[in-house]
Length: 360
Ligand code: 13P
Ligand code: SF4
Image 1 (cartoon, helix red, strand yellow):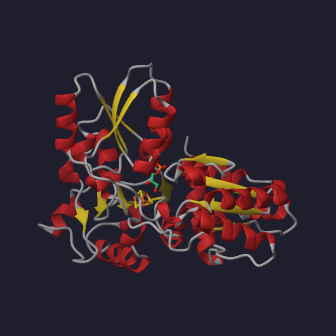
Image 2 (cartoon, protein in one colour):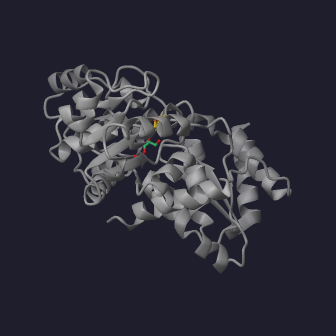
Image 3 (cartoon, helix red, strand yellow):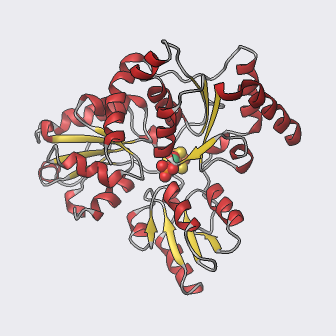
């Protein structure tokens, strides 16, 4: 059956030619990656969508917030104008491919938090920063309030941008990326209170915590990266002397602090590609990417950092049957699963996304 699906997918790709662009995130399974035109980390994928000129449709093998971002960037005003008003259609092969971290921050909760905070601190001097792993409405919130979007590959540069414009940063939804990045900039844990959206509080004395804050973190996390623990690092170091630990900054602080290298999926791949034969790695990120690196680099010794399986169940929802179904419907003129961000949200999200793309 897989062989038949592969043939059908390739037939549509051939028929649609350059009018179709299939993008894939590094966490996608191998059999899906095999059909992508381009793959990347979240930042690279945003750049690819922003640069797409020839295509009429982007089929996004990734998760919902990535497809939203692609829709916003591929259809920004100057692109629409250059295409005579013709929109690029963005398709997510399975609508259930969400992100549990993105779901941990809803726009109403962010607005409530902002209002609550404004009773204690001057929010005109607070720069909201949303991790790209968030709904477009949160990006729009950042656009409206002088804020910006970041990814795991530019978080430090983005926070520096923010501190040039304000005194504090409100960072959502991933507390770990926010904390790990701020620590690298010399900000201390007691200057980073964590906002709990369900309790509507920071814990301890809220007012004092807010007043001394530099970065206000949101109590959100990635359920995949949360699984990596410091004891896994200790065990690998004990059992494999000389091993290097390579992790994603969505891992908790205790793991990040012990790692040799921490960075986006793009950086993780580059680090392995540039390492000499015989290098030993324990890698703390999504399972499919680690397994692919293992297969592509038999000259190195690559281990998965956790003894338990950590895979992203929503990334995994994109499979050959869904890809084939969405492609054949597109070819037959009955497109399914189009992601189209409402105009007002698009306008303000774009402000925050363009700020991000301008940060070097
Ligand atoms: P990056 O590919 O940008 O590192 O993001 C990782 C991730 O968790 C995507 O959801
Ligand atoms: Fe979301 Fe984590 Fe999956 Fe990335 S790996 S899509 S952050 S749940």
